[in-house]
Structures are given as C-alpha cells and as structure tokens.
Image (cartoon, rainbow, N blue to C red):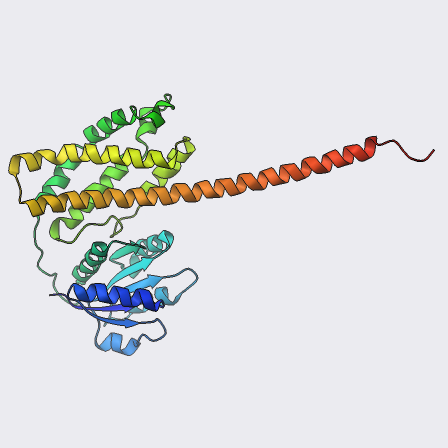
Amino acid sequence: MPGLVFVVDDRHDVLELNRILLEAEGYRTEGYSYAALPLERLRTQAPDVILLDLLPDDEAPWELLRRLRRDPLTRGVGAVVTSDSAALVDRAMNDRSLRVSAGLGMPFDIDALYTAVATAARHDAHTAPPAPLVALPLLQRAATLLRHSRARVLLNWAQRLTTLEDFRRHPNLTLAELQGHGGALVDLVIGALELQSTSRAAAAVTVGVRVDATRDHARLRRLQGLGAGTLAREVAALRREIWHSIYPIAAAEAPPLDDLWGLLRRLDMALDESLYAMLDTWEADHATHKTHTAHEADTTSTATVANAADTADRTRPSQWP
C-alpha cells in the first residue's frame, strides 16, 4: 500500500507536478518549500519517503538530510534526490552517511520516479519490516544469462563495431581501445535488470546506479576522434547483442506478453539512459574544447598582429635626417 511522501522543492511548478504524479500512483503527498517545511511535524508524523531537489550553492537539502539521519525519529525515512546536476546526484549517492536510496537526474521518466520512491520506501528498515515484493523471475533469469554471456557479448559487439564506417577510419585501435568501457555498460544493464526483478515499475539506470562509466566511455571516444553519432550507433549495436544473448529465454519459455514487453522496456531504458549521459558528456567536453581553442586562436592572432606592428615600426625609414 503506497504511503506518505513529502515533496520538498523551492520550484513550485516542479513540486506540484511531482505531487500529481505520485498521487496518480496512489501515494499521499504533502508539498513544501525548504523554508516552509515543518520540522516538528516531520518528527511527529514522519513520512515513508522524502523527495528532495538539489540545487547548486544551496545547503538547505544537505542540512535537511543530515538532520533526518541524526534524529532517531526520522532516521528511517527513505530519501530520494533529484537534480538538474548529475554531479549533485552523485555526491548525494556517494555520501553513505546520508543514506540516500535513489537519485534521479532531470528530466527523468515518470516510471523512474515511481521506481525510485518504491525503492526508498523498501529501504526504510528502521521503522517497519520490508514490504512484500512481487517476484519477476524473467528479469532475474535474463540478468543471470547476460552475466554468464558477458564476454561473448563484448566480443561480438567489438566485431560489429569494426564494420561501422566510424571505426573503419581508425583501424589501429586495439581490442581494448575498441571495447572502451563497454563492459561497464553491460554491467549497468545487468544491474538495472536485477534491481527491477522485484518490481513491476520500469527500470532506470539513474536509480541507485552511478553513470561514471558512461561518461568515461564518451570521453574516450572523443579522445579517439569519434563523433557523437558514433555513440548512438555503438549503443544500437550493443542493444542488438544484448538482446541476442537473452533471446533464448523468450524463445524457449514463451513468457506472457506483458512480461516480455516489460523486459524489452527495461533493457531499452537502461541503454537509453546510458546513451543520454554519454551524449551530454561528449557535447559538454566538445564545447569546452572549442572555447579553449577559440581563446588560444584569439591570443595567437593578437600576438601576431602585435609582432607585425612592432616589426613594421622597426623597419620603417626615419622621416628625419
């Protein structure tokens, strides 16, 4: 039975939208800005989950999380953070003392929000026993099969990459350079499938899973001289190889259509989230590189003009005898 969620956000439109979405899923919600949050009521009628938005240079969310964990009456409240900044989400997830159950980079999928809140509610082990979970064996079996076939998936994927025009222009890449952080990308998919094997909500890589590997992969491809379009094409190739590795389950067992559709949806969302993170990283690094290049060009041009003027002054004939 969905419980009570406090939504805390200084952006009123985002706060109300999150409340509407959660109430549509059956949760009871209360919304507050950080300044208006009744701390005493938080202690006397603690919610099951608190949904916090993180903003740069704003300490209010961090202080609230620390206060929750210090107080025995609120220590067990599940916490979910959202932010436009992936770095802030990572910071919250990596600070074990805050015990943040899930983090969502904005914009996020609606089902990802439901998964995050459900995950946080289940992590509330200090005030209530874990809620009963609905097993989805198909997802767990798919994750297990993918884990066992991981090495073969990566080799087949690397072989497929060599047929792409982008990589054919770089024939000197070693197998390790060709695969890049592909192994970590497969592991993210495995983790997403395993995380969702006990929930019918849609999976999201951003729920409790860091995306450092995807960012590192994007930076590696840019250093190798490969464009953003390459990232999309290689993720499409990886999607095909992963599906080929888990297809035998569907072929042999003929699972219910809803379960099969859920598996495909979770696979797509996991890879799509990885691709979005890679594209964001590639574009940000590319923009930074262009800015530095333009600055260096301006500096060089200014110096060249100054040197030319100085040379002209020194070589100009004197007008006086």
